[in-house]
Length: 269
Length: 239
Image (cartoon, rainbow over all chains, first blue to last red; front, side, top):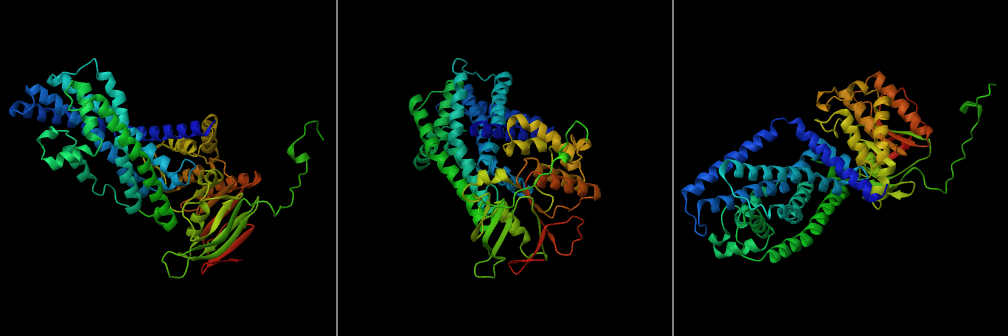
């Protein structure tokens, strides 16, 4: 068995572990689907209540915001890995990962996979419920293209979770400022309303993170929303962010673990 | 003599240790201070474990036994010195090192509360990069050896402390390491659990492994060690 195959098998083990732990909490899926239904209901009536500049009909804004709601779940999942790492530090299982040939960095990266898969399923359910209950019009010819686009976007989103995981390993506190960052990204990423409504300086912030082009591209593919830029440019931005941020975040996590091992604080929680 | 030959019909003579070869476990000049400028908890500690060695480290609470074990396991770095297994450095080649060493930390941590015993063992076998074709057999072997059959499908948070400790020990031996480090392994174990542990150690040593055991001074042990060291004021002193 080659080293790559061995590691892939170990990655699969982490995903299966998280899946079985998830299954042991029987009401979690139901409660999260109900949360999606409540969000959809809220924004469906908001779209009927308010006339938003740039949207010709209430349904256009509803389609816009449903994709945003679906992506917020993905955004939260990316950051959730730091909370999971914190739990593993407390339970002593992160220590065991470090004491395995698979190691802490690969273990942490593998820990992100199940939450992201689950977020993808929940996002699909949200879109499906939006279509089934509230008449959301999905643009079926391009919907399948949203899957590879989302995978690409995840590679650009994931580093945020890994940076926060590095911070968790170093400070022993989960989500130090993560909720602020998620709130900020959901605003400047245009998840709930168009970034054109934001003041000029805030629009600049929309340009320096991957959520804006990813959200715009996915909206275009899922509900045929018009794009400010071209598909090619949005893709180039997402790839660029992933290329820069992913290695940087992996290195940060590696350094945080090594610092903990050198100081002896890796065993603290 | 019957026509069937058994292992007892042969006399094996193990070769004398070849000192120029790397040892299964070697700690050289290991020092560690928790606060800079204060007296180090470990002060230039040297320790070698040869093939088949059973070595115990004893000492008062807080004297640095667990710190030494963690350094030997490659979990934390020494300020000075090095831990090697068969010449492989814990810091320079952590993946290779962790394939050779297995560490049971003190306490009852390191388990996923909501996973069953079998899933837990399977997970750690895969994380230990046990070859895919051997995982199922290793898991069943561990269940058998550590008498976990009745508990195999039980979740960890529904098990007693002694049962959890048996599972933790099973996880430690499951990857078939060359060197096993046990930090207070008898915690919560009953007599049967202790006997199972001693049997696992004998099998390890029979296959050419080595054992480093750590427990507080004054603890009565029915198990015999080849060497016992007291750790005091950062130094190992042979008893």
